[in-house]
Image 1 (cartoon, one colour):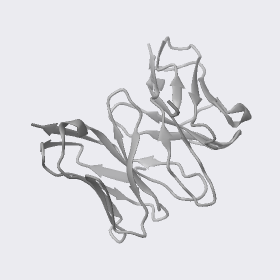
Image 2 (cartoon, each protein chain N blue to C red):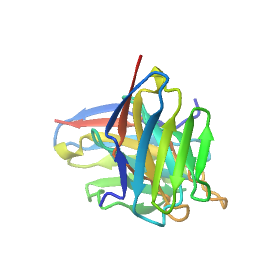
Image 3 (cartoon, rainbow over the protein chains, first blue to last red):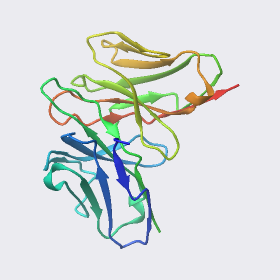
Image 4 (cartoon, chains in turn blue, yellow):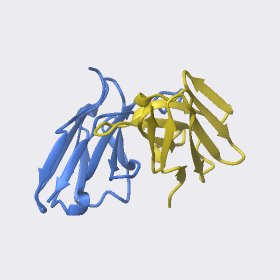
Length: 116
Length: 113
């Protein structure tokens, strides 16, 4: 399977703990996006990378959140001092941006976070 | 600010019927409009997408109709099948720069026999 993969698929943690999620994009995709989806809502943009550079962060991304994409391959999203409001599905998507301007983003299966 | 409004919230259609989901956007800088299908516990999967230089795009049983002046677009699923039962999201983005997707709130579609 050469699609976007995310690990873990499910994470249950206690309030105040730190959690880290991993996303492996489609090979050679230069853009990687993180979205958050709460129950009954559409995904909301959090941040994105072009290669290894993080180019934009949403206001939704408080200072407890940090994302990295070392070497422009996989990415990690860390949440420090988790709060119950962080409970959501965290989705990763990747795309190939070239001068033709393609927008197609391919999503992974997501990591469902539950904060108790 | 919700920039993409989607309706209805839920929809029940008989097998073989036509399912229609509507979306409206506010940002005139949007120029890429995809539809995603999502099954429970899965990530969204790209279904079909359109750019504003055409008014309609068809792929199999799925058709997007686009009205640039009204800033509206819709998804039509012809000959709806039980396997089409899922949540559908419209989205919009700009072709240059960030290209982040702004999603609607979703429509839960149920196809009944």
